[in-house]
Image (cartoon, rainbow over all chains, first blue to last red; front, side, top):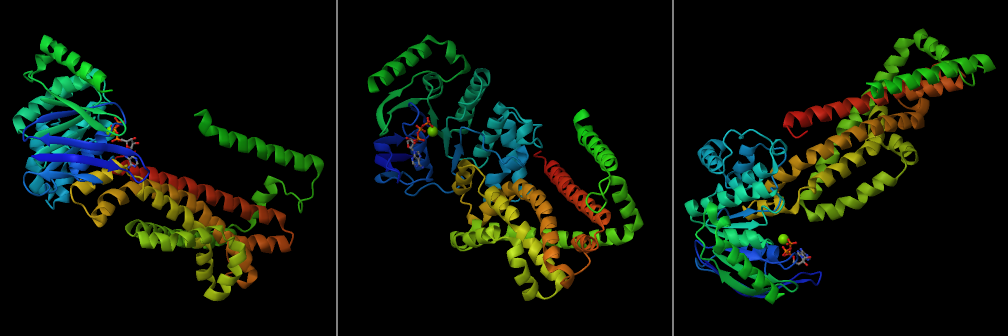
Length: 244
Length: 251
Ligand SMILES: Nc1ncnc2c1ncn2[C@@H]1O[C@H](COP(=O)(O)OP(=O)(O)OP(=O)(O)O)[C@@H](O)[C@H]1O
Ligand SMILES: [Mg+2]
């Protein structure tokens, strides 16, 4: 889907957030970008989304051109919903920005809300929802345009562990059903090991890609109890320690 | 409940003390009239004072309306274009730091029409909080949301209409509440500067008139009306803000 070659990003303030990052994204992959705070994970994600441009290196899309608006979904650490808008209006936003009327969009909105388990909450405002439900709205908003690529920047970091586990399992089943490509930023080794097919380890300042590991776990809700999961966590931990 | 009654309790005690002390010390009415005399002065000519209050309030609300429209429009203009921001910002600050009494005589001469010149003066005072608050509100959405709009290819205008303007509404409303009180102050200051040469019907003019004639109780009655009007404007606009936010569902 996408090849990043020797990508570097230095901000005008002088901070070199990223140096020589090379990465290949396969269609249908689930990649975790794993690294400590400040290692340039968000910067890398913004470059992929086209929200920022690299100073050096290139991004090459297999399709020949960058994705059109709506082909990329983005989920931030905070749900970042419009506080004055209902669940339905928040999820409608990407379609609205593409020029659809609410009537045209309603079936898609209903379908995606059902998929993330929010049926019945169409008319709730963000402040009436729990943190986990707000994140579900945010995910529904990212999915409503049926993106080919889903970028997620520590989406579950602010949630409690029970909610996080639920959302992680739900994300996995979403990914299997929708067959989109996911790049998932996290600083949790456990989260990366549970979710990703491929774990990319990053080192801080300037951010570099230290190494990649592939997971051979079958993605399922029972994975957490699987000894192979514990072994993968240990392998990533060792890799991280070697890289730092 | 107690906290609600507290201002009234405090006011009653202060009034009783005032009445008692003025009587006990035999303070002459032309220096400090007792509250009972102030009430009597109001009762002697309620229509005259209320008509003056109405006149001042007309100036106040006209100015508030103009300031709200101008303040919001200029803030939005600034948000829409960097050039407009560079062009407008210093002038808005200059307007804010210039003391009204210093420019009021000039405005009264230039504008000519007494009502219009009073409105212009009060608008100058009321403008800044509305303008500054709206500008702050327009810049308030978190960068993630602006990024999201960019991701979906929304241009400046769409981002302004669907994100920044709705985000600015609560800020605008709290600016409106501040500016309501300021518009009243501006109207009174302008009336004082204009004096008898001006509109000659507002409450400030009644205050001037009473002070020339040493009618202290009447002067106090006018002052009390002004204070009550200010409080009513402040709480009224506050309630309007809460109501609107509740209707939109985010308060
Ligand atoms: N717009 C910017 N201007 C200047 N410096 C920036 C900017 N964005 C990020 N940085 C710096 O670049 C470095 C990498 O930031 P980035 O947000 O990509 O890290 P991160 O890995 O996402 O960290 P975290 O886990 O805390 O989110 C940091 O040192 C940060 O301060
Ligand atoms: Mg980050």
